[in-house]
Amino acid sequence: MNSNTALSVSNIIQQAIQTVKKGKIPFIQVVAGGHAIIILASLLLGQANPFNSDPAQHPFLYIIWSLLTAAVTILMMVSAIFVLKNTQQNTPVTWKEALRFAASRFWKVLGAFLWYMFLLWVVLLVFALIALALVVLVYSISPSANILVGLVAAVAAIWLIITAMMLALCSIYAVVIDDVGVFEALAYSRRLLKNKYWKTLFAAFAIFVFIFIFSTLVGILQVFLFPLYLVNTFLGIAGTWLLAFPCTVLNSVIGLGLVYSLYTSIKQTEQDNTTAQN
Image (cartoon, rainbow, N blue to C red; front, side, top):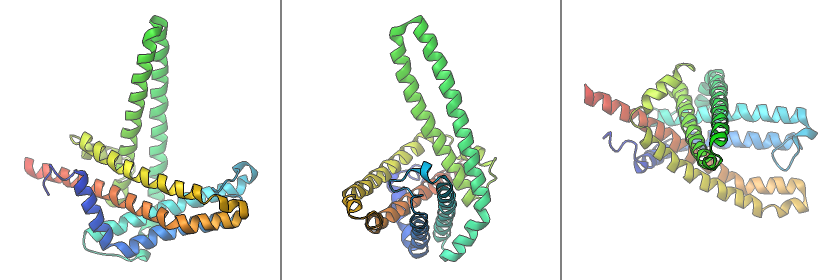
């Protein structure tokens, strides 16, 4: 694969389509099954669900639902990535094998999520304190220049968030796919992204926009189905998810496939560059 085209959006989309098509059955079984478990848990826990509920009314049940959702989401994501990895290597696996793999990596991936989220909050907190101190300092010197400083700080905050999330996501995939240690994954991902940051950022932004648009359409569909709640609460919940469920699964399939292809394209580019240097 040419290193100049490895990170192109069209290449990533083509690679994602081919990989998802080859691993279609176990891949969709894992994704659809994960969503189905979350919905079933929501219905069984009554008001402790994401449908127009107040968590304060049922704190214990809501905590159970939140923990179950987090666990199922991790298992679903890791299983799906495992299916995609083996499909791309022409060694297809069943959804049961994928779930067993996900179970073996569960605590490691959970630790990675918690560690990267903690680091993200620390970085954002430090940035916010520095930005606030700078704004106050500039305002004391020249109030009129404070607006410009605020705009620069806002743009810098957006860039920092996108960069940190991209690095964290790349690290999660490194942990799952390449079995990199949780604490070593950030340095590993930084090496992968080095010298191809802007290409990766552009590709990631294009993927994000695509997923965001599709998610918005699903949300609009649920809004149009809201009148069902006026007839009966359970009918509203069941009707909304029976119609929106296929779209939600499709959105997850597209997202996981595209992000996986983006990560493998980054690795391919790095391998091509290393080969060229040697």
